[in-house]
Amino acid sequence: MRYGLIGEKLGHSYSKIIHEMMADYTYDLIPLSREELDLFMKKKDFTAINVTIPYKQDVMPYLD
Image (cartoon, rainbow, N blue to C red; front, top):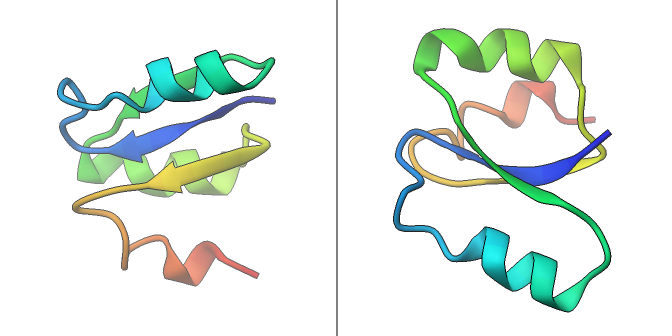
């Protein structure tokens, strides 16, 4: 299981640095294409993720 951030372009993100400085876990930046998003969300191989542009609304059907 993992923690991370999903989005399209994440090279500018400071999320990994911030999370790993403040907590005792690995935080991954997970760039996804629109085609990869469905499989990623259905697989649910994560403990928790943050979502950024352009997928904020796209992930809503996967939430419970």
